[in-house]
Length: 170
View (spheres, rainbow, N blue to C red):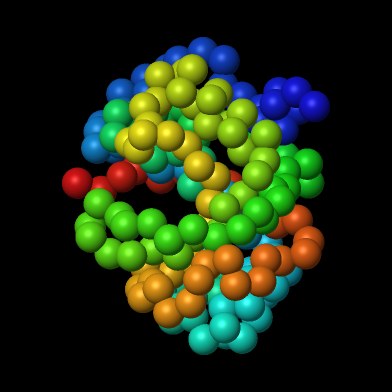
C-alpha cells in the first residue's frame, strides 16, 4: 500500500501564511497519532493489571511520528486516513530519556508509521533522535519492577483516532 493513500497533502503552493507558521514553529514541530479509545482501554487494562505506575491519562496515549527541532509547519497540511493506519504491538522496552527519567514504551511495528516519518524527513523535517522507533510511551516513572518481557502485549492492532501537529515549546 502506498503512503500516498494514507497521507494526503492538502496544500500544493506556498502563501503568505507560511511566514507566520514558520514563526510559530520556530522551535520545531511535533506530529503524532493519538490512540483510539478501544486501543487505549486495552493498554490501560494491562497497565493497571500489572501495577505499572501511570504518568499518562486515558486520552493521552499517542505515537509520535515527528519531533523535529527544525521548523516543519508543512506537517499541518497533511491528513492521515486513520481508517487505513494501524500498528502491531511487538513488545515493551525500557528507555532512559534525555531528562534522565526511565520510560516504559510499547514498541510498534508499522510500515505506514515509518513511511509517514520518512515523508516528513524528505520534506525538510529533522529527527531529534538517532533512529525512529515507533512506540507508545506508557510511563515516564518506570522503576524496572518487572522484566519488560513479562508484560502482556495487546492481541489486537493499535488503531488511531486523531492526527495532531503542533509547534514545539522553547
